[in-house]
Length: 194
Image (spheres, rainbow, N blue to C red):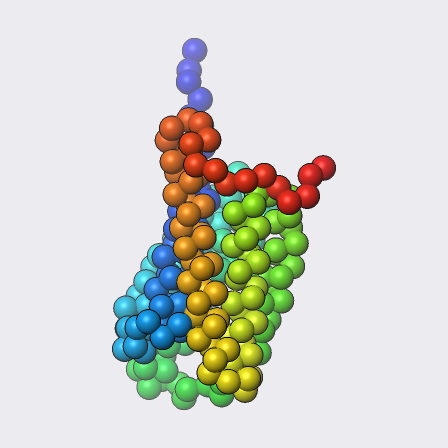
């Protein structure tokens, strides 16, 4: 008789990569750190925000979790896009983009996040709140780049900070609950029941 290994949940890894990188960038967007701190964000966005989330997405595919696969691979690719943009501009390989182009990209990420948020109504409260805060963050940052003013950018930073901390909380809860073998940390039930 052989013991079958239980597959680990990759979501806490993806949530940690997303949350930590989002907190780091959002401290800059909120005005808590200067733009010089972006040099710390770029490698973090490539490695933990990008690579770790893509790994989590691939593992979610293996687990048959469509939502987790789409979310983690998409936001991992977002972080690679963002880091690659900053890196290539900083190296002088491409010209800085028109802020309106970045604004449209952020707006489309907001639209994507909004429809992903709708799917979270059947998951748990914390995941629902992460996606709620995230689509608001994207729309605020897009509004700033589309000419609504610097206040939108700063507010987007504060919403991003709340989003990242929320994601880190869910990562912590899922790791702790799995380790303890019980629901030691609350994550709440679904917004919409069957």
